[in-house]
Length: 401
Image 1: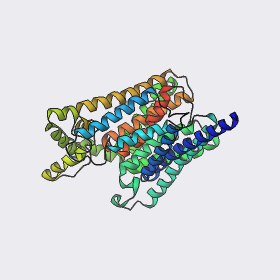
Image 2: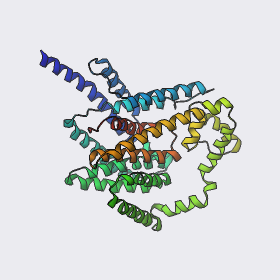
Image 3: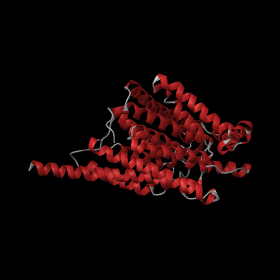
Image 4: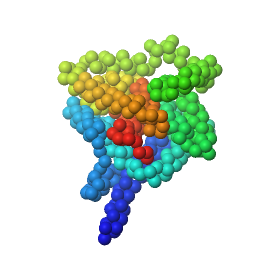
């Protein structure tokens, strides 16, 4: 009878765990390949989490840091609704989606026997991402951006996911068997091509920042080598004007006052200056920027933007000083804890995971800061994977998925 009970419990555990894993992988594929069916993936994760929480014997895996993040997320969500004096659009629900995806990531099984299967799945998805988008980039170069589907509808989307997948591919290459490293190395070259094809200056900056942030954790005899190699690569790209790199950099420096970011930053500052005392403290509400900016767009005859292309301005406008302080504290604490845990680890895969998380968090933040709204699925859903994995990492010794 005990054996039957154990088997029944194992089947139940595998049932909701497998459903959550399916939902998480569906979300990964949706974001990397098409950015389309994320709502279906989130629904699958939600069903799995409800099933797991109702199982009784084994509740949802949570830890102290996650609870603080969930509380903070709910505070931002509620404040965003209460502060708004008009329609809030769809943006507030992204906070809930991020919390749901983060919770799903944290339920991944950590058994050693399941590790190899997840490694194969992740590597296959990463390689498929590069191959599919290389094919699209090569054969659809004449297709206007306005008519392109999913990730190719905006150069910054392709840049964002190239920036995210590059550290993952580098990590997978380092800790893979020699037979697989060649394929992953080719995928890295293809990913670099995608980044260059996007010609996104925030993408270039994000990769440089993601590399620099892990330099202190690398063995001292390797630091200067990596810095020299990075300088040589950047020099070749710049002086060779590969993908118009130097042209775009020089144009930004010489004509920054004419750049669209400068334009929207000035108008965002003017909007913020019209805030009342309560709005400075608690903000205008989630999703209000795009509505309020419509008036500015019509009065000055300028392009309508959905966000100020600056996280600080965006969060300050939506949540005020109080919300900006909360986000900075939680974000800063998260990065600080990963740094502390990684610094204390000896060389090996555990330290490698910490460096990967730091690299990913930095790349996403730097790229998104100048391009993608903070309160959007394009930023918060990819970040939920880093957040979930990071909260596992800082909570206890990493037992890999």
